[in-house]
Image: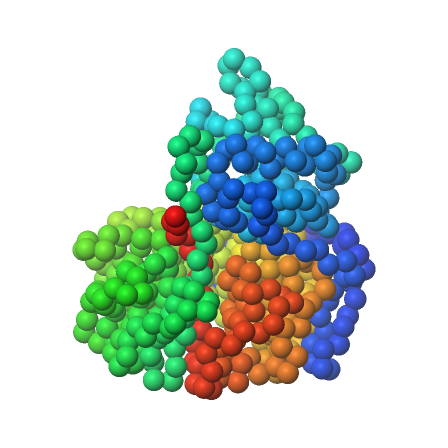
Length: 505
């Protein structure tokens, strides 16, 4: 790799909340756990007008946040506090997650997924003040201004050990180091706003390439392409994209007709991300557009892309073994790493990462900043980004970092980890026997989801776990829940679940 020489990175010492223990699993993998598991799932309550991850009024946010102040809930990064509004981790981001009625307690690394930046002058009760940098990672709820000049905010927050949830004023200097943010689903009080609910789309395909999907767990399957022959297919919002006979087709809903997006029988990869639509062909040329009826933008006329990803407005690609990035469709390619040895890239909410042929992972949060070398010895066979976390399989073991400069935390040892996933607070892995293990807290105990193994594919989405077990589609709606049979017959080849918000009532 032709990279600037990177100094040795000091590892911040992380003191574990409990002694790590090793548990043998079938003599194959040792899973690392601690005695105290932390429940991390919010439950809907009759006391709430909103639904988890749905629209919520500012008055309900204030009512929910006041409850912890009334109860004098002490700050903690372990354990949960439970009241009529559900169970949430009582730290800064857990408190905000509870107030906004999120489906699970987020942390500062993935809280930006559900909020957006606003002008300081536009702050309203129930919005957030947010900071995440090397020295401070904190979020608080904005309540009102403490002065006529609108420089000193009054906030509600869980802010440190030895303190309880509190409403207090911040100094001007401290407040100026925070960004003004708004929850994506917060609405002003007034006429009853439309309500939204989270709907999970379930899908699978069989050996003939027939795709079946539905939006109700116990509903009937819709057969999307009775003639089969689907190569790749993806869900995003209400859209379904598929490669059928080498052509790119798109549906805008389960019962919409297929719309031809690209023909010629040479489409090799497709992606949908928000409103963005993209594909590449056999020459490695990437085509993208942001309007369904709009023209395609040809991003690399010379082709030779071996991997590419979409994330927000950004497009990342491996071109001739080098990592290049576009910040917008018509923008230039920005060189991120050269040398011809880039093997995998990832973009995740501002974080940029890649690995090379030696399995060394590089990551950074500032496009023009220095790369952090995460594992100088290399040997990563799979790695993934989720919020502030990085998970990796190193020498067959599952390790995780909670920050770029943090230490690797051993999650599972034994040298037999084959697949890992991080999703929200949930982390999971499987071994060569196809046994899946998952948990919702770093220092919690692993749940063995299928002791008999034989999972050939599995996926995390929200609270659901989907898997192909002996060729059948099974799903769990909770870690301790039963496996629900979604499709039998022994011929399921690929499964996919995706959550989305839809208006109800």
